[in-house]
Length: 441
Image (cartoon, rainbow, N blue to C red; front, side, top):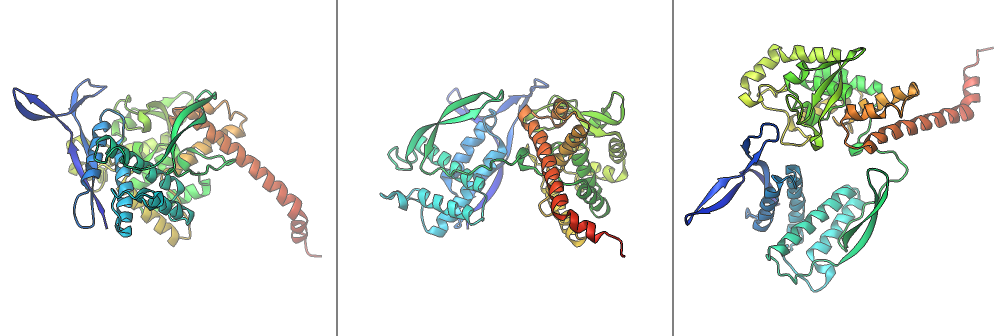
């Protein structure tokens, strides 16, 4: 089977001076310090066939996309996802005994068309998600377009047919707009669910009973670091990428909320002091954290257990609040993923099954949804749900109002569902319960 390898790539540009050619490291200007810093790509994929030979064309495409990463046009996680998509295509090509450059006179015999059919069958059988099938085909179209633009394939190479269509959408202000897009016969359309209130990134909240059970299990049988991270997720709504990038000074700089001794504000984002990673480079000084939890975190920051990890850490990582047992950061790159946390979460789920608790679908990000819906329910119970929305938006560091409104809509629909179910129970089973609960004669 084909395989992926990852390389750390310092980007350099070629400079010709006085007839001599040399390579100069690419640098960018830090917006905070105004200093030039050298940039590297930590995880650029390289694709190899089952024979061990490099897929040179694909690797050149990854390199060209890596150069766009430092201009802000692409993220490293996107390039990593592109590598996984081409890996799936390469494995399919080897199983089918076909080559990526084959050109058959008939459409239904070309690799791209056949692979599209394979993706459609895969998601119809539940092997992969429809969105993944659509993304893989989109990646392949981008790759083949690049092959044509670089003249690796001849301009007349038949790939797909195209047509221009107008797609309607609503802007951030709620106005209906149209945009011209190009569709191909290889596109895989994924049906959208209508009528269900969905939260950001497909998150799902857990009940308060399940939340408490998860925290109790993590406290008893998992690492203290995982327990504190989950506590931050459930009680502050922070994403995993932000939690793993928190600094000790971030906790020390917490500000008391006026007339609320039980809660404090911390600042996160690239503009915070010290800066803490946030999705979409958002910054917020309105992240709410319980004072008691902050006290636990401050105690942990000066504990002997953390001190042993700090002693093994590199100088640039010693200020992080959470470090692995080897002194490394929990976070990886710029995304919200952590291989170490994922391993601990898998162990948490395994331990939960041993104790009769089913949290197999639970992910760290569900703690964020639990936090948001908990606040929305409290605001609704006091009759201030919609008035509370700007505060909730600030607490979650959302960029758009519409993202926060999803939580408001979700809580309102959950209340309607609960009311209807209660009424149904009283109507259908009320007499049964009355008879069952009557005292013996």
